[in-house]
Image (cartoon, rainbow, N blue to C red):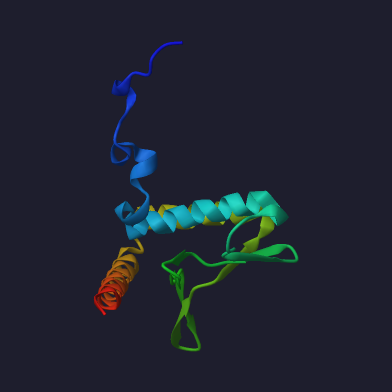
Length: 140
């Protein structure tokens, strides 16, 4: 049996598949990862694990794209001269993956950068507050 060659060891942060984990992920990457997860869960059907951000009713699927437990405003529509933020969209079941790809492409092109930046700031504030609370509890 050949001995293990330590030259094969590489820091996980230098490998793309591992570098997106934890705090290293951008808010945009979190949104894209959540879209990919919805696709996996939809393909798994009834055996899907984790919280579902979509629901199937009849021949349609309703979905939201969430980041840090907050849904993105996917569209703005006018209803009786009032702008309305739409966070949940529906699509026929046969077109669900295409709809997710459509929103993933829009996220990649930067259409949601303002929202994602605000969500990133909100997440950072929450993390700072949790750190200070935990530090105060340890000190007490």
